[in-house]
Length: 273
Image 1 (cartoon, rainbow, N blue to C red):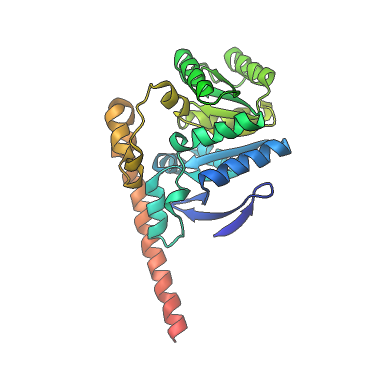
Image 2: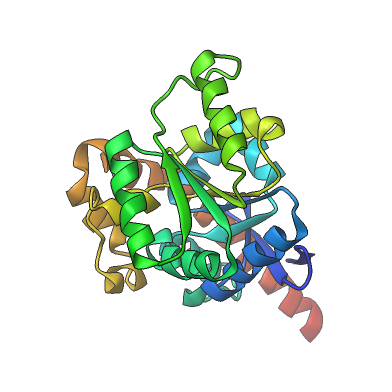
């Protein structure tokens, strides 16, 4: 456990579990961290971890390199909170933040403070429909969307055209929602060419707003059942993520629980002796 200062005044605690680092952040503290970074005018990466990203972290060196460059990593997955509690960490339900819950508080702050927000991801029609829905929900919001289906080769014509459009828009917040690990790879490969802004890995945030992906009931997250609703909605895309990948992560959890239990037993023995 450590205490990390992320651009005053936000002070958050960082915890290592399942082989990754996460920060204990609520919706309110995340929004304040974005506001602080925008005011500072500095490039900041705010990303998240769930079981899928932890699996990718185990198997993909570029994903690991991306997370090493991140400034804040919030928890997106109640299963990670549960794993933390099993390991004796003081993670709480409020520290699980998904874009379904965060998108409106974030964009409300953006509209109020005049941030320019750009989303990169989804097919063109979905991106535009989602952007329109979000602007309607937040009057005064400066929010545009670029479709995310292009050749991501760093020096390729399509990628360079996307980078020029981002530079022309000059976002305060750039939300990259191209799915894992494509969005992490793209940010890692293009970070030096991006404007100084807050970078968010936003996944399906705009797809939910556009209605392309049905929103799971909010009670499901508290009971670690949101994955089931997403699996039913997109079985061909998500079956491997939810039915196979967790077993690899669970092996790490089992190891960490055993090691942690043995350590606590030794510590109690020393105190009692």
